[in-house]
Length: 152
Length: 79
Image (cartoon, rainbow over all chains, first blue to last red; front, side, top):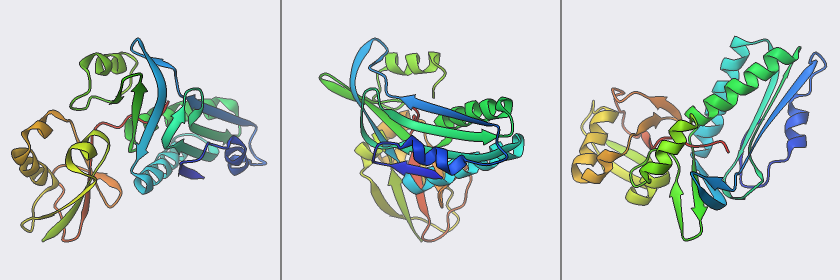
């Protein structure tokens, strides 16, 4: 299951999608929207995606992960539109025979998702909003803070 | 030949979500972008990536009639 969704992410659906009798481990990553960034209070987050390509790119990442590690199944979902602070904007679930490869693959998948999948985040502050990522018009301070955190 | 363009995030706000252009056969994605930047110099400040048929392509990719080219500012999904 690889899905871009406007509705809240339902973790139970992803768990069902990766269930596998040969799996001894099931690792879940949930990315949740944070209430502050670069010293500013964030009131809500907004995401935009190139939907069909984002789903295709998630599928390609999952295929690469399966070639690298002995993974059973993978499910990924990313929410778009307005997401209130504290809710999940992204979920990745990986099942594998053993926990080591499940953790490793899940970590790799979220790192690659942030670098490759065509999704954009806009942070809303009191009195303004800004696209995240080193874009024209983005305050340099925010771009620098993002680089320090290892984001792109 | 005709190609369609799609823009996202901050670029969408500058350029609109969709556009169409007539280009010469054999035009590369990079050349198309340079032509757009020549018309709108403020675009030159954005680092961009390109996708055709829902997959990333290099700037050297040669366009075909009817291609849809997506132009992305740096992605920032996740939490």
